[in-house]
Length: 267
Ligand SMILES: [Zn+2]
Ligand SMILES: [Zn+2]
Image (cartoon, rainbow, N blue to C red):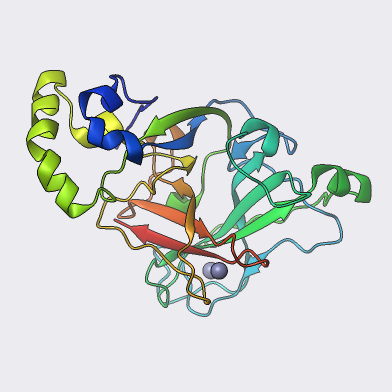
């Protein structure tokens, strides 16, 4: 689905006052273009990676790329998905001393994982420290047969825009029923579905997960409900068509010092 949400086009707080308290700030990662550098925020671009840290790999047994289901790949390098610098996403709070967020994943199909795909890994870094200590020069990339096209984001820089959005699937059931007549009236009046009017169903940081299905919020091992960190969804402009996959959502627990994270997906 192509989505060009840039914040609600109408004053929803005013039109549906019950929604006002549920508005959340999210930073849209609108694809810009160009060839991103390793010191730029990007989707699928090169990453600022410390020379003394091996590039992450995935060796899950049986992971494969179409049409080689019977002939799985061995250990393959993961691929860059998102890199964000704190200066570009002021609304995102970084852990103490950190100013770079990186997400990589394995571009193969994983039969053991319910998501079949991705297995995202998250890293927080300090830009100056990485630059001072030296950056990894030769970043390995998966070879032919070691990746699924649909999990390879096309490199592009991003222009982050901070907007307010409202819950779609996360709108409490009862409230949804109460508001349904109002919502329908708005949809008719503006000729737009509520989800398109009020929700950012696209690549973004913070806000509500861009679920296509009923919510499935993860908790950390200590039972804290995690917060939504970012959503990565297929977008035509990005040339990243994730097949049956609706999106991949990454969550973080800030209550635990080791900052555990988890992912969910839907279709
Ligand atoms: Zn893998
Ligand atoms: Zn926790």
